[in-house]
Image (cartoon, rainbow, N blue to C red; front, side, top):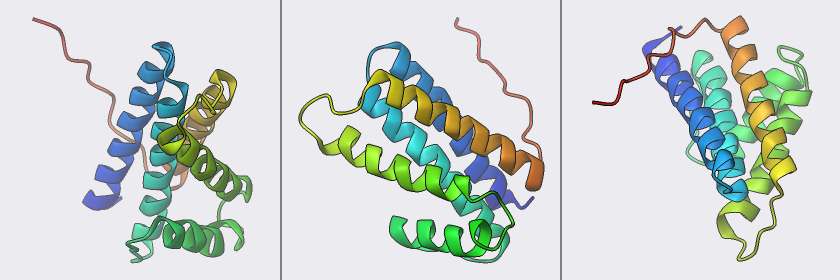
Amino acid sequence: MTDDQLELLLKAQESISAAKLLMDNGFSGYAASRAYFAMFYIAETFLEGEGMSFSKHSAVISAFGREFAHSGKVPVEFHRFLMEAQELRYSGDYATDDTVTPDQAKEQIGRAAKFLKLAEQLIGQLPPVKHEKNP
């Protein structure tokens, strides 16, 4: 695992933690958005390992599907998870009403955690999470 891949996976791990906090406090839309970003960072991690980098979300999602899901390197469901999460992210970030349900947000958080587990199996394990103590 390269340093860049490690940083992306740590960012994904933090996004999952943030999504859980948001969910626990009633912010389903924002929780779904953070879960999407976790999956997005993981997709970037896979692409980084192949020397690929993109500036647009759509390009990352497309390349991940082409290079990893459709080629059989990862189960195709992870590409679907990423695409569906992106759709909910738009609702969570831009809709003016509560369009993301708590169940949808929980599902996205679970998928992001599953995606991270896959990345750890295929790319490398993350160091244990250090919890800071409050003063």
